[in-house]
Amino acid sequence: MTTFKEIRGQLIKSLASDPSPASAGDMWYNSTTKKLKGVVLAGAWASGGALNGGRQSLTAAVTSTQTAGLVFGGNPGPLRTATEEYGGTSWTNGGSMSNGRYQGGGAGTQTAGLVFGGYSPPPVLTATEEYNGSSWTGGGALPAAKRMQGGAGTQTAGLGFGGYGNPGTGQQNTTEEYNGSSWTAGGNMATARFYMAGFGLQTAALGCGGTTPSSPATLDITEEYDGSSWTSGGALNTGRNNFQGAGIQTAGVVFAGTTGSNTAVTELYDGSSWTNTASMATARKYLAGMGTQAAALATGGNPYTPATEEFSLVATTKTFTTS
Image 1 (cartoon, rainbow, N blue to C red):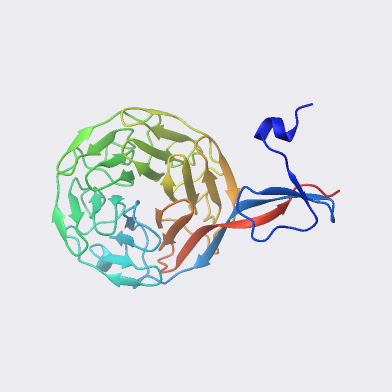
Image 2 (cartoon, helix red, strand yellow; image 1 turned 135 degrees about the vertical axis):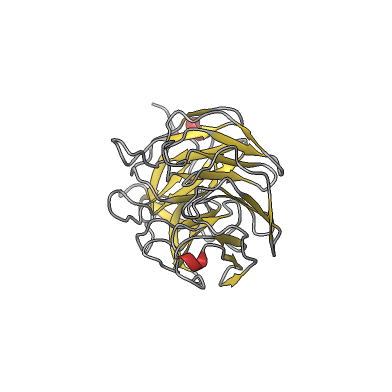
């Protein structure tokens, strides 16, 4: 029979009491309680500072952080040009966009943000804008107008994928790569879709879930981008759309959205499969998300909420045996 030592290369210590402190990954046998224990990372959500205005269909700079976040655009109408910056506890107003929009794609950080495409009724936009921490300036236009697309990467190495074009063009499977001044075509996704969650880097991005006008309307599929082509990843446990995520391709988190009704479900990705973790306090869709797997930020959403929630991975002692 294979032993733990053969699998992990070490023996489990037998201790009369639980060690203090203990770190994630530690494992021991408590000889007093006769139980095998270890420290694992578990997800937890906490309330953060509210946006200055409740809005939905807003966009985030997806690689911005929980202590230096950036969101822009959205509905209702007066907020379509609005930018807000998060300092870890509260939101403050930043410079307004030139093109009011919602359902745009986003990338970058608080001091180097990127927005592209989106909807500014009546047109779907090709316009790109770049943020320097205080003001927006025009960037290179998308090859084709899009909204409801996924975004990843940085201001000088951005990525947009999927989405929905002008009337008559429908859902998209195209990918565009940004170099800081212009967009070029990347590899097409296997499944055309919109309202998916997207995050990661230009050379290591993740696009998951989403919707199409046809059946199934709520998707659980994941695709991974390597800088030139997309390949299949692990399926979500809960198929959904209108949700968001954060992190990198091998350590991601997604949250909220709709399965037909608003959901608060949160899932973690390890590069191959998704596992459920703690749900958000408030189910919502049309929100913005940013940060890392261990420190993500979710804000805004339907119905026009200003609420912000902060996600963290917390070290928790778990009992693996009962005798």
